[in-house]
Amino acid sequence: MKIKILSAATAIVLALGTGAMAQMSRTAPPTVGGAPMYPSRNIVQNASQAKNLTTLVKAVQAAGLVQTLEGPGPFTVFAPTNEAFAALPPGTVQTLLEPQNKAELVKILTYHVVSGAYTSQVLERDLRATPGGKVSLKTVEGEPLIVSEEGGALMITDQKGGTARVTIPDVFQSNGVVMVIDKVLMP
Image (cartoon, rainbow, N blue to C red; front, side):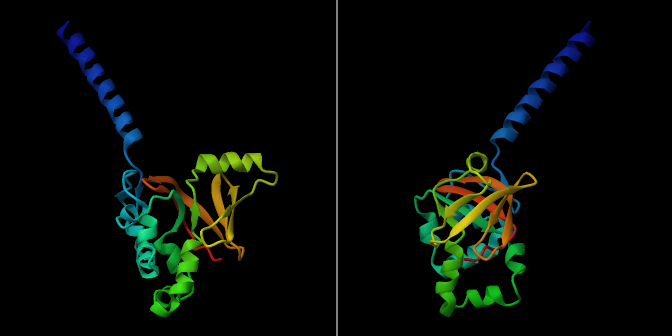
């Protein structure tokens, strides 16, 4: 009898523990570059913690856009990873970070920002409702980005025909949402 009670008690504890773990996983913030992305922090605060977004953060600082991206928003930022920046032609990033190229850097970075908070759910809904399955988003830079879907992933196409895949969608921030992408978009 004691064994049955002990077994039942163990089963209840395990079930409760599993339920608690499932609840924790639902409420745990997503990670980007090994760092938790807290929805109570703004875009710059979170991005500066992600090891795979250090080039983006350095570029935002060099462009003088920190204060803007710390502002109330809401913004949707398509955030290229360090690997995306490294895939640019050799010397491109270093050249863009030079003070005399600030205007070009600002143009490229603001091309990755859209006013409003667009989630993957909203974009997928809009894609289904749009003939041709493409949605145009006007960037802060002024030129559009084209959103489509391929193989279950959101794809972002720039004005030059380059395409980036959203690798981590819906990273919620206090002032918007970040979508991590695998390429740098060019206006």
